[in-house]
Image 1 (cartoon, rainbow, N blue to C red):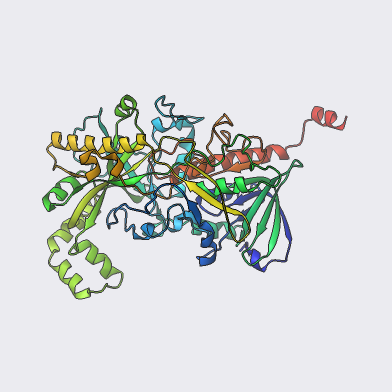
Image 2 (image 1 turned 90 degrees about the vertical axis):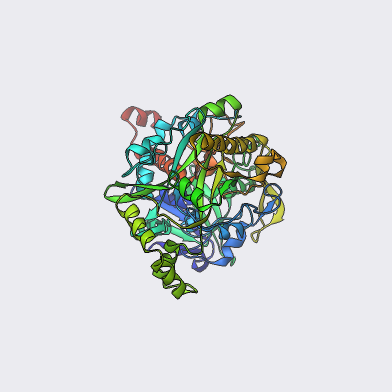
Length: 565
């Protein structure tokens, strides 16, 4: 194993490598994996192979923006699991300082961005990516394979691939369209979200070097072909890492903070000559749009919005069906991309929840669960048929069905990460986070809810109970939570006045310094970011591999002669 611990290494250790990857989450581990056998790589992480409380304290931020009143969105059990753990963590502090990063707390939810997310949309500030979605498709395919996903199809085209397609509702395509999500699982543990810690273990066994409990306190960009990293452990041990190329993979908050804090040679911070680092902070505002509380209404709606499965490469994959605003409405009304997904709140006497508890060894009331299952034999039998034969979601007994939403944000330069006056244990400023939610995204969310309600009425589906602030038109009463998806703080683009990295994810004006993860997204879309950031990391790894190979090629005879002269 090649996992080193800075705490037990000699004082003032010096390490020299081809590529230093800062951060052992999905972005950093993907890049290390793709460079295996092609470069001498060192992955640095401020945590270790397993959870320790000490490193997590470094996630503290000074929050001066939203959500100002704490996390206010409702909790619930269902398709997306319990969110109680998320509500208990302060906004923008949900980061996992250990190998595997954010995959230790995610639920595996994945989707690719739409074509329109990549396009120039004149009604949205700074929209448009520096390349089209088609260019990323090969990398999305490789990312899906790594994440153990099915086909990268997330719209109505998926219907043709499913074992049993949903009933056609004949939606008004000018108003709404279907959107699907799928879920990444461990290959050997179906139902367990993929944890990139297994990727780290595999890399260590194949020879990739890891330096754990290693906090990078500063990046120094040098002109002699190497960059220098100052590294320290919480116990006071220090090291220096010199690398031809450095890739910053610490997430949307920490990537910006570390660039800004690397200011001993550049007072404004690395890559920040135009004051762009940390700006355009976007997340996914989340809230509940509507509810259904009557059992018959819940059953009717879940017939159309549930899990649907297919077989891919011999393995089952299930997709969750939801709804998003049509491109036509977005363009006509100047709105952002957003999508609603069903969350089913299981009743206390749900037989499938009881079976799950029994399979895990029983809960507080084993006898009660046994009686619940025995009294619902027909429901269990039909559910097993639905799941195993038709590859559909299980028919739960539910207390409530709600539709939650995640929305894309209009980019705002004043929504940003800066440096606080408060210092961490290394004497470095912590991040000050000022997340702003604008009128455009609030209006987009309300419009989606109203459009779904109108369409359901037209189609003869049950009438939803809209969130009070939407029903009353009181936009000021809207309450949102962040989804721990900070993005765009080191966004990709061609203009250093509005971006931090170029189309190859290299920091403008700092040769050999790269950034990976959701912080480089030019726009944040509405979809969960992991699939996209893994694909972009693979794209970056290909670029680094080509660059390293080019540097190793011997110069031609003519070039050698000119160099000698």
